[in-house]
Image (tube, rainbow, N blue to C red; front, side, top):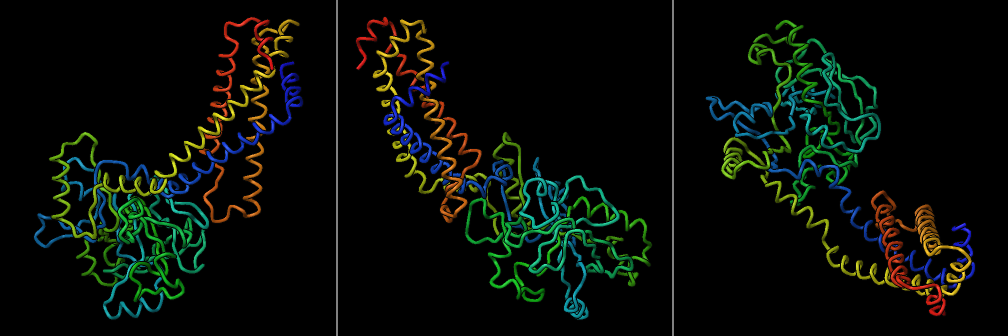
Length: 455
């Protein structure tokens, strides 16, 4: 019965209902627009926020050396790096001395003692912390203990490899393998995707310092080659360090020194290591939030002593710059947007209150005929809710239709979860404020008094 009376109110006050509908739609449009601008800027940061918003620092490692080593041995694992620090955790990536499926140019270069590599490995934290956009397949797995073959995702400038292909590591940088180790391609990275590889170091000091991008950093993808490329090879293979260690152990145990390589002496020098890794690339060094400033500075100084790096920044500095860039210009829009929201909301509440006052005589008659003030109040609130709901649904349809026909192309307008939550909060605020205003009008009044107030 309440909804029946609410529909009757809509029909009895078409003009006022339309005015309220338009104001509610305007209010939803303002909220969706402001939240969309924020979400567009936040979208790139969201996937790596958990990586960045910790205590520690980020650096672009070229190489690191054991200080107690007489021959300056390079650091090959994050665990070895951690051992030289105090209460720190290192999340790194690795340059692997390996090349998958050598083209003729690489074979010719090796004859001149020029060695190339196109394999990179990640610690688990990088694998679980960020997944680039894929053209096909799946991303690397942190629980991979496969020892028979390497699982790899590939980044390439042409459609040379597909998900499911099996290729082989023919050689590494020191020895020529007698047994070809299979590499199963489980995914293909979109060439236009941002990846955590080697920082583009384009002067940015926010979260974007983590990323490289083949398309953005290469003038012509078709001209990428192994001899002259600085940032990317035509084909790069990314694997799990855990998977690499399992394969290393399996094949080193199975193969004798003579079968590992044609060159027996080189095998002895490598201590039967099939793959040599170097901790290199974007590296996070994090500590407990409650660690002392002396420990923090010790670790930072130690990194500067044992490593060659392109940059070294505090994560807190990166986080602050990120939020500053996200909120750039929004700080000027927010007061304007809030002002528009408040003005529109006040106008809507005022209109709904006027309608309630205008209907006082009718509502008093309802009361005399047996309806309680509670039911009468719910009729008016249901009437307001119908207008607000209609405004929300119409607004959604308009946004979806505009997006379908490309009207929003190049604009920040989106309709996502955050925008819908914002709109639902507006619905609650409109209903609550309208209800409170109407309740204040009838508090302590009799039906006769309300009848006299009707216009």
